[in-house]
Structures are given as structure tokens and as C-alpha cells.
Length: 100
Length: 172
Image 1 (spheres, rainbow over the protein chains, first blue to last red):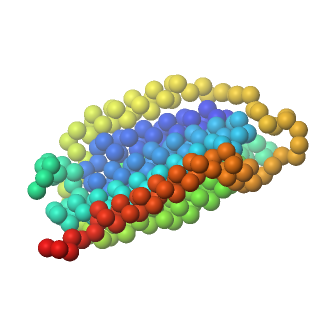
Image 2: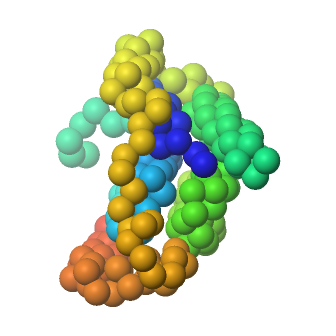
Image 3: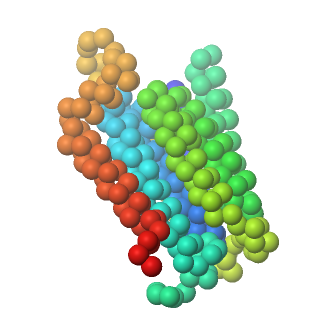
């Protein structure tokens, strides 16, 4: 029904958008959200392959990707909170020191 | 007819998810970005449904749109960034970043084959076709039992790590 090539194209475009967002945004929270967009793009391609091959293992891998994304969000946002406690603001261009 | 409807639905969902991803990355206000990411996640869940991955779609809505995004919104509200909307939201190096992202997307786009049809195993293997959810559950608890347990360990470590990192120091 849905060709896997279309899924891979969508995945590539979404991953590129997430990459642009991660590299160019200055807000550290939006950088983390861009990582989530990239992980979602990978899930789209995994689900597309799973559909194409009639093999459910792709979906299982996508579930593991979601679990890792949840862990990444928890640790990343914990770091953001610790960072903002030491100095207010979430602009990554202000964070030029290793220690303060 | 059903095939055509499925393709129309796929291309609508794909267009909408790309558009909401672009809007999420480019909006100045972080809360607006979060809401566009929510739209992106719901459209991707629709794509999962279209691909026959019902459980993945449910997990996408519950975990991604329900838990992770709300977590991001909580932190965003907690930090309370009044100045953030005033300054430029992109670094000065953004053309370079855009070039890198577009180059990556173009590379992957050219690496794929649009009409890629691989041999489908299991469809003609005999036996009644199994529902996607039971097959996913069987694979998860037999073949992927060890990675499943490791995922729980990773989540536990992440919870403990997040608490330790974000905890306010009390001794001072």
C-alpha cells in the first residue's frame, strides 16, 4: 500500500529538519526537541521496513528507540534544570565556560 | 479504492508532518514550537497506523505526545523565559547548519530507491495471519527479552540520574 521508498524519503526529510534545528537553534530545550524529531524520523523508517517485510521486529526496535528517547529526555532536561539553577537562561551561546 | 485512500492519507500525513516539523524548528516562541512538535507526533502516529503498527501508534501517542512532550512543556514553564522570545532564535551560523541538514537529507533521499520492493517473508508462509500486536508482543518477550530487560535498566538509570542531576544541593 505505502511504498517503503516514500517512508524513507519522509524519514530523510524529517531527520534533516531535526538536524537543522539541533545545529542552529540557540535554545537548549529546542535543541533537545530537535533530537526527538530525529529519533521520530528513525522510527518512521523502521516502521516502513517492518511494514514492507511483514516482520514485526522493526516495531520492537522502534519501541526501544522510544524508550531510549524517554531516558534521553529525562537526563537532558535534568541537566537543563541544573544548568539554569547555576545561571539563568537557556541560550547555549552563553555557555562558554567549563566551570563557574 | 482503499489503496488510493491509503496513499492519499499517507501523503497528507507526510506533508503535514514535514510542515509541522519545519514550523516547530523555526518558531520563535518555544511554547509554539512544542505545540507544533505535538502536531508532528500525532501525524507520525497516523503514519504508524497506516503502516499497520497499531501498538507503535498507541505508544507514540501515550509516551511521546503524552509523557515526553508534557515533560518538556513542564520544564519550559518552570524555567519561565521572558527574554527568550526577544533575542534572535537562531545562531549566527545558521546558514551553515541549514546547508548541513539539507545535504544530509539530500544524501539519504538519493540513497533510497523510490520503488523499493523487497521480498516479503512470512506472508506466504501459511497459517493464519497474526495480528500485529500479538506478533509484537511475542517478539518482545521471546526474542527481545534481554534487550527488554536492559531497556528497563536504562530507564531506571535515567530516572535516578535525572533526580541526582536536578536535585537542589542542600548542604550549602
